[in-house]
Each structure stands twice: as C-alpha cells, then as structure tokens.
Length: 120
Image (cartoon, rainbow, N blue to C red; front, side):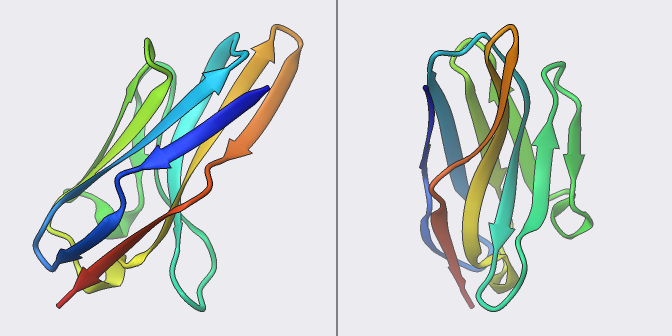
C-alpha cells in the first residue's frame, strides 16, 4: 500500500512565497511522474506542474517563471516552490503521483490536498 502526505499550505500575502511537499511512502518499486494540480472554488482541477523521473519539468503557462517543481528520488518526495504568489493562485493544491508498488502493478494516486490562500 502506498500513501501520499502533503504539507506546506497556508495563507500568505500577494508577492509572498510558499513551499509545498508531497511524500510517498509504503511499498514502492519505482515512481514515474510526480506533479501538482490545483482546484479553485467553483473551477475545475487544473495542472500546475509535473516532473518526470529524469527531472524534466512542465508548467502551466500561468505559473511559469514563478513556480518551480522539484523531486527528491531518494526521499520519494516532490516539492513545489511558489514565489510571487497572486490572489488567483488561491486554491487547494493536490499532488499526483504515478507509482509502481511492484514490477507488474501501477497506481495513480492523489494527495489529500492542501489549501493555499493568497490575499491582496
């Protein structure tokens, strides 16, 4: 069984920074992709950033240049450094991980979500 635990959300003023973490634990053979999504009130969940096992990152246009995704493969952890935050970044942020608990099984997992609130 594999679990994801997110941390790092909170409230910040516009222009501030926050760092989110998402750690995978349990029976893990390997981890494929790791990423972050967000869902603002009344809106659909949207991609924020993803990173492959090789370290290639992809960002939503709205966060490019402000957010940085990184992963620590030794710790099975993905981070999202969020700088120059804007009120429109307010949302619940979810990590999303593709993990192989064994060589023949594959799971796509979601974290429990962490709230980020940016005030103007």
